[in-house]
Image 1 (cartoon, rainbow, N blue to C red):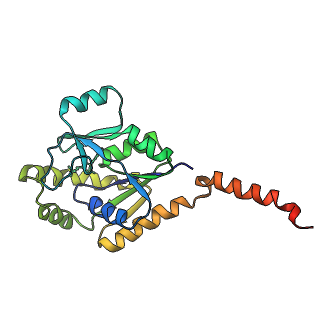
Image 2: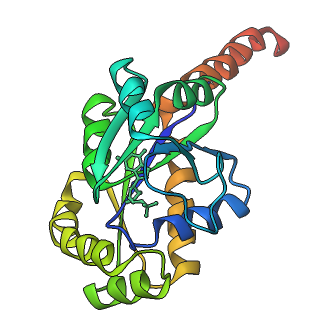
Length: 209
Ligand code: 5GP
């Protein structure tokens, strides 16, 4: 059985990274697609775990080779999702999470409308600003860009199927998990197993005399 593609998006600082990290700890059985970026590595980040950090030239070479399922310039840097990483995990039957910005998320959804799409909405602008400031990962200029971009990003919530309001991490993670588990129960996503079970019933008819 193929895995589901789960697109999780929000404005920068919306909390999607934290929620996804918590979700992975709960052992829901999901894979995470590590993106490529040209953004400089932050001190707490790990190459190959948070991102594959590459230069602009290499990014553009991969772009020209059509290696990205989607890519976008976000807040002044390139970010892209590796097509092979995603496709191989899905073929193995693993649900794959893409943690991507709003424009990239909308692009993937256009190409793959069957994907599960979830928008993480921060409870207020003030909360978003507070989160971005307290994580101290951006310089003032980057912070201002991210805050300014958030106005347009939140307006696009209605392009996505699910909205999780991130007012409280524990609750939001539970809601996120319930969406992912619920999606796996869709009839149309379980046709192979269902057919096997029904053939077993068919083959067992003669047990009753
Ligand atoms: P950050 O620089 O804070 O790690 O990420 C900035 C934004 O880029 C976030 O909204 C993040 O989700 C998004 N992002 C990360 N990887 C990708 C990707 O592969 N594609 C796109 N379109 N956005 C990404």
